Amino acid sequence: MKSLNRSNIKVPGRPVKVLQFGEGNFLRGFVDWMIDIMNEKTDFNGDVQIVQPLSQGLGEIINQQDGLFHVKLQGIQSGEIVQENRLITCVRGVNNPFEDYSVYLKLGENEDLKIMVSNTTEAGITFDSPDKSFDTLPLTFPGKLTALLYHRFETFSGDPSKGLVMIPCELIDQNGIQLKSTVLEYIKLWNLPTKFSNWINDHNIFCNTLVDRIVPGFPKENIQEIQNELGFEDNLVVMAEPFHFWVIEGPENLQEIFPAGKAGLQVKFVKDQSAYRTRKVRILNGAHTALVPVAYLNGFRTVREAVEDKNIGKFIKDTIYNEIIPTLDLPKEELEQFASDVLDRFLNPFIHHELISISLNSISKFKVRVLPSLLEYHSKTGNWPKNLTNSLAALIKFYSGKSGQGNIPLKDDAHVLEFFKKVWQEEDLSVIVSETLSRTDFWGEDLSQYKGLEEEVLVKLAEFEMV
Image (cartoon, rainbow, N blue to C red):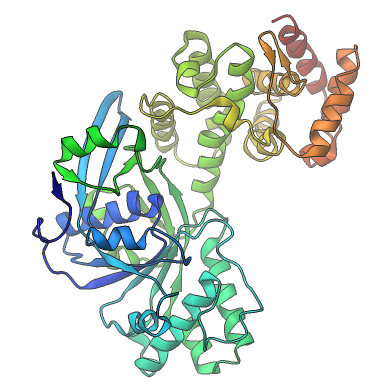
């Protein structure tokens, strides 16, 4: 079997236009996959230089393959099974700044550089005051970025045209704003010139973003079979679902700099991404969270088998289309298309998604993902939504830790588990419901004060008690 490298694969020479902090599965199976398609279908003509954010990582393996790897898409799209392989050729290689800080800083001297993307986990965008100077490599990602931007600023004497577009992919709200704020904190800590902070503010763009694609990563269970199919010894194969969606908040000219739309990719450039974040949280995440206790108590253990069931499948579809979508503000067509995509994703036969893994910290998840839809539906209609109320009752039963098939391995904060252990010692279901709904620390408000909710939940809980 042939090795995967640029000696065996002819790759066109392209300028490096993207600096990428992070070499993990998600960025390679999402961002790099998109850039590769942009190179094929538009005049973007740009490569990616990866920076390894931690001292240990995949950089050595990626460099051994000259930045080449395959993305293997598997899933359901528009009701049809999709399996596609794509060789990614846009990654130039990986720089490890822990090996040579000066070589890392020189990346900022690249005149063609336009864009910075990152995914350094939710904890990556942080300010660490022990990074007292940029004379040595800063520990944090924002510190490393600030040092590189300052080197770029000095190299080009503050040229306005040499500013970059920052597109962070970390899963935190307002990630661009938070990244910029942290960069400015480092500028202040390091007493860097006011001209530099002005250059950051005036000539660099920090975008808030929302990313959406499930990327299971390296298929170690059947990698030999996949390598035989590909005809190459690829040790960096990335598995991903076909669905992809990226919302980037920024100026109108951004879609010219990053022409994903011209490549037919599902990327939206918007002035405010909050409506799409709400859509994802309420429909995708909310449906997951609402599904878990109902499906688990009915004997199912994975998302796919639950949604394939006639009754549970109807339950979650009705929940999304009739109880969640009516509470959202985006155009109905967009919401229903997204809902259709979500149901396809739930049915993906190539992803084994355990309900119990989704159930981690379900109380806080229900508060953020499901409760807003439940309360908004009641506000708009005057009625309590049948399915979402049913899910709330199932959640209370779920936290008893027992189902008809045995004990449930609950995972949540200690005070949550302790409350339910104590309250489920009660024999009166009405007391259990009342005390649970009145926990303002769970829900952010006293739900028992809503007229009729307690009674609705009690009826549903009694039904689950008979299961």
